[in-house]
Every structure is written in structure tokens, then in C-alpha cells.
Image (cartoon, rainbow, N blue to C red; front, top):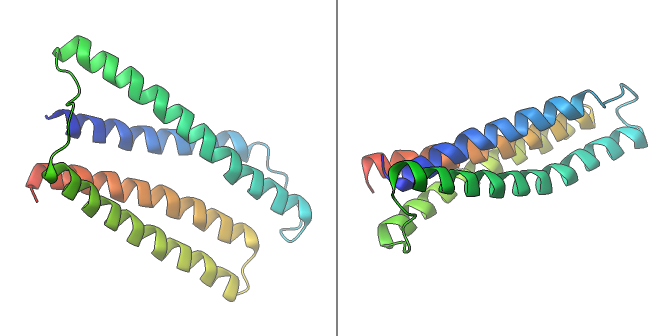
Length: 148
């Protein structure tokens, strides 16, 4: 497995774990109230605004730990450069990720049009973000395995 493939697998697993663990922790704090109340919007706004920095910090720590362990175990350092193939793979994976998030965003907005509670919209947005990351990382791995 190449360094990029290992990094992609670590990123995929960490994305899923961070989101699931954070969601489980925050689900315990959720109080069942009127879904249209200010408390519900406050909860979901805080949920999303805290998820972003928590995810960023956790990913940075995971990448550092991965880089250290990978260097110790394989004696292989992170490549110092990226070539056109790497950039093309990243662009194609980003495209797939963006399409996935756009579809999820439209689905979330559609839930409001269908008079579903706002909680459904927020849950769909979180799921769309998670699926966009998963599809992006899976595409990245696929393109590294298959070639461009």
C-alpha cells in the first residue's frame, strides 16, 4: 500500500469515528422539546459549530500520530512533493464529494419543503457532510488503486 492509500484509509476511518463519537456524546445532551423552539435551533447550531473545530483538531492529531507511526514502522517518510497524478486524483475525489454534499443539501432543503421538522434538516445536513467525506475518501482510494 502506498503512503497516499494509507493516509486515505486513516482519514476515512477517522472521519467516521469522529462524527459517530461526537454525535453519540451530543445525543445524550439533546432534550426532546418542540422542534420549532429556540432551544432546538440552539442545540443544532451549537452541534454543527462545535463539530467543525473538534473534527479539525482531531484530524490534525490523528494525521500527526499516523505520520509518526508510519515513519517508525515502515521507515518511509511522507512524500515531499505531489505530482500531476496526485492533484488529478484529489480533484476527482473533491468533485465526487461536492456532488454528494450538494445532493444531501438539496435533500435537506426538500425536507423543509415537505413540512418536516427542522431537526430532520439538520440531521440530513450532518449526514450529507459525513457522506461527502466518505465518498471523497473512498474515491481517493479508488483512483489511487485503479489509476486515473
